Amino acid sequence: MDPALAETVITINGEERRATVDARTTVLDLLREQLGLTGVKKGCDHGQCGACTALLDGRRVNTCLLLAVSASGGELVTIEGLAQDGALAPAAAGVHRPRRVPVRLLHARADLLGRGDARRGRRGGRRADRRRDPRAHERQHLPLRAVREHRPGDRGGRTVKPFAYERATDPDGAVATYADGDRYLAGGTTSST
Amino acid sequence: MKLEVETPRRLIDITRLGLTGIEETTSGGLRIGAGASNSALAADRRVRERYPVLAEALLAGASGQLRNRASFGGNLLQRTRCRYFQDVGKPCNKRTPGQGCSAREGEHRNLAILGHSPACVATHPSDMAVGLAALDAVVHTRAPGGGRAIPLVELHRLPGDDPSQDTILRPGELIEAIELPPLPFAVRSRYRKVRDRASFAFALVSVAAALDLDGDRVRDVRIALGGVAHKPWRATVAEEALRGGPASADAFAAAAEAELAAARPLPDNAYKVALARNVLARTLTDLAEEAR
Image 1: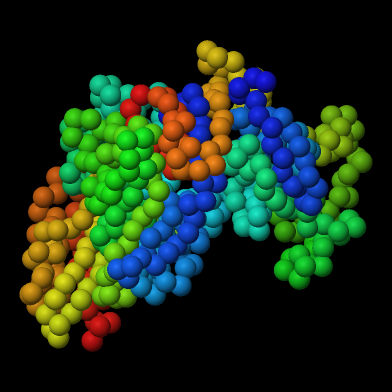
Image 2 (image 1 turned 60 degrees about the vertical axis):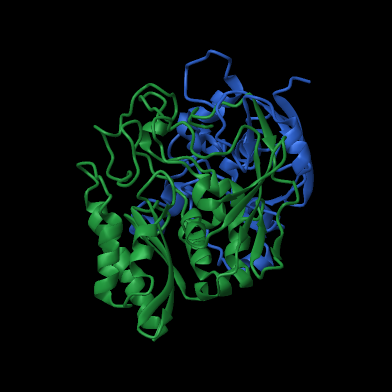
């Protein structure tokens, strides 16, 4: 297997999902691009806005800063996981009172909210097509595409450079396997290369 | 890595080494595994009761989501948020030695006033490390030739003429645990952070302080400053000035003044000198009032 590819197995909303990913893939990109779970959003993609938040092993985390390979073995719950039979699960409903508002009206003036989807259907063509594609209104900017398309020497956009991924299981192993040019994930080292 | 500041050939994931324990030491301190999360540590009862300055510093940093993932060791090894370090299109001696420093003549409002060099005026971003610096924490490492114990205040370097090195760690050296020695008077300790907005921002200036009083006199004191230097700044000058002296607002102000006498601010961060002085004096005054 290509050293930049790796297998990851994550339990997502109670279901075990297996995927072969480029090691650069974040959990956010895995969820949105490969698994079609678009409840997590890509806002800043740098851990600041929190739009990509999900629960990993019961704790909220930024999925944009979490490598899919590093989350392997974990249990993830996204907003989709709070649904039960098409409605908000009872435990979640205790916290969040359900209210349905079309996404495109969330930022509209309050007096438009009542009118809701009255305008739906009046327009045809591309706009209607966009509505049918649930992800069309939130087309992502470069990083998503770039992770898939990045080639060495490609300066088309700011991207993560490819790297090989390895998981250490004990401290001595981590130290023994270290070589020049490596970095530790979650623990860093500021060695010169 | 997303900014291409770091481009490793290989990434070794050390999040599952089992180094997450928080244990009592025989001397009465705590030994904290480098993999313990910032949120677990901030919630630990022993940390909150015995070292409140550390719990406060942890909670002053980042967001809930980040604290759940941030490890104790990783927090110490954060890299500077100087905008020129993060922008690979701009010269930066820390990122690429010899390129020159863009911050001196550029945007440096958030950068260092103490211990900087012509090569680099970056600050260390961690809040937690400032709390640890005040508590005389010791970093235990593991390395191919054997591990070592490094006082936290010696872990991070001043930039000098080689700002590319943030710490004295050698290639491959791994932080295994951080030890907090017993410091009974740290039950009265505090972390105060000043930033541009109320939360989720890096410190302009921060103060970690613990105060031990003997009546109206200072028996002992620990002070560290954040947001002012390339490393957590242990305020030894102020500590020395205060030990055995009066615990008065005037004495605190004079000690803060003495510590900041070494400051060499740049045009746009001169405000930090007065800010650090005042926040330090105020924090010590508050601690003294609470003790009475």
